[in-house]
Image (tube, rainbow, N blue to C red):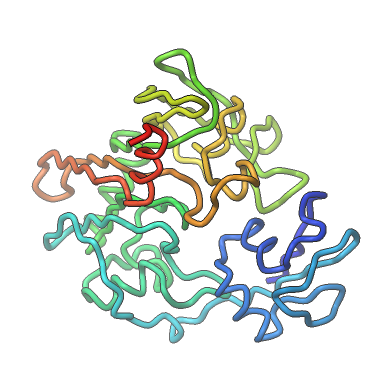
Length: 301
């Protein structure tokens, strides 16, 4: 599959690998691997990761579809919050991609899950075994995984019915003066940047995000978000839309932020009905260390 990158004016003069991490879901390591394989060209020529992007450049990614034999189990540590014969709940670290995709075959949550167990649901095929829902690469937090098809069908139905409780904690720019908010704004592909999402009325899907203020700082706010829908990059797009982008967000935030950890967005709470026992399951996870360290800095601790 050929993917042509649409550049922004702010990309000019930046390193190629940095620009591509902002326009795709690939890490710099993935980008360098793809460059070495000749899968990325600039103006039909092979270049280095350090190449400085210029106005008028045509950047093309040749994303070959992964084949079954390339998805291998890998001994990657997992933070397993809960596990039984039907479901697994994991606390995903920031920086980890959930499942393999074109150009990314290793280091994903799926690679780790395949090493951990061999009884994952096959509904989503060999590339996404057991994966019921995703969170972005640089978003940390809780995910539920199905270990058999019955569990997968039940958990997927709960997601479609919006009965799964998903609560995220985000650090956003600016001071939000009101305690609660509800953002109702449809989300679709950005016509000026096909790698990004935006609030738009064209080819969009309804999207609703509820938020509650947890703590205010001099120029930032800590919020909890509850999703009524699950659109791609929903919280990140909605918070940018109302003028409070997520801190550290390389795609929708401010360039001067510390982006070493990606966006400060954590899937903190997850609740669902067990697909077999019918028991209500609710889980909570701690914020990552870098997130807690930033909050202590803002509090002056």
